Image 1 (cartoon, rainbow, N blue to C red):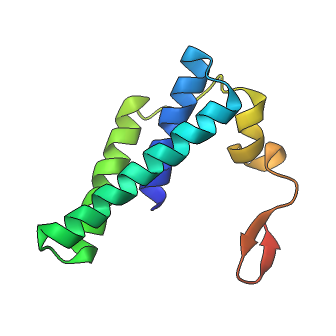
Image 2 (cartoon, one colour; image 1 turned 45 degrees about the vertical axis):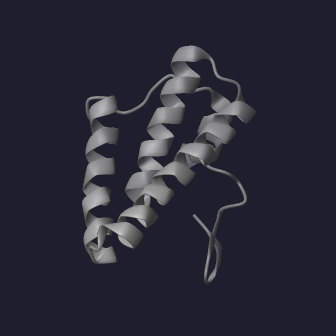
Length: 106
């Protein structure tokens, strides 16, 4: 799931940075793209007759490769502050933290 999330993030960052896509449509694009990637995994498991862990590891590597190739393994820069607030990490991370089984942390 992490590699699929990374792929969604770099595609949305590219759309927002280069085409000026507003925040709410960017969220919709992220949800749709994430759903497509998850559905692809599910279809491969359901109809591919391959063990789910093999599909998971395979798509993990494919999604990671594609997300690294989009920006040539470089950091994504020039993303508007609205998206940096939600995923920038460090000083620009969401002030309420991240939900974990043990409570809120980051």
